[in-house]
Amino acid sequence: MSNSLRLETLETEDSGEITHVRLIDRSYIKILSNRVKELLVDHKDAQMPLDSFLEQFREIYSDELDLQQLKSDLKDLVVIQDNSIELVPLQLCGVRIQTLLKEHGEKMLMSEFEAAFAEKFMVPLCPGQFGFPGLANLLTAFPELFVVRGRGPKKMVCIVRDRDVRRVNTQPNR
Image (tube, rainbow, N blue to C red; front, side):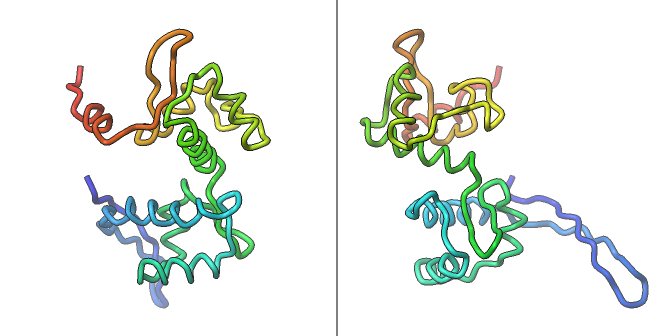
C-alpha cells in the first residue's frame, strides 16, 4: 500500500488545537529516499553541507526538497543537524557493505567479510552497535540489497539481483 494516515495537530487562534487525519501518498517516499541516498553516497562518509545538498538535488532532479518532509519521512535514512545532512549509521554501513561487495565481484565468503571490511574502511564491522547479534542478522536489514547463500564454510554474502528480488517477492506464504 502506498498510502498512509498521518495525524496532524494544528493550532488555531480561537479554539486552541485541532487534530486532522490526512491520507498521505507515500509512493514518492521510496523514490525520494533513493535520490537522497544516491547524492550522499558520493561524498566522504555520506555527509555534506545542507545547502550544497539542496542545491545539487535541485540541479540534478529539477525539484525542490521540503526539509520538514526529509526530517519526518526519511528519519530512518538521514540525520539533519548543524547545517549538514548525513546518512544514519546503519544506512552508511549498508552503503559500505555494498561498496565492498562490488569490489569483490558482488559476492564474498562470510568468513572473510568482516576482516575485509575492517581493512577497507579502517573500522571494524560490529553488528551489535546496530542492534544485531551477528553479520547475517545485520544483512537482513537490507533485504533489497543483500542475500546470504550457502551453508557452513561456503556461506556467501551476495548483492541481490533483479531476478533474486522477484524470487523473494513471489515465494508462497507458508
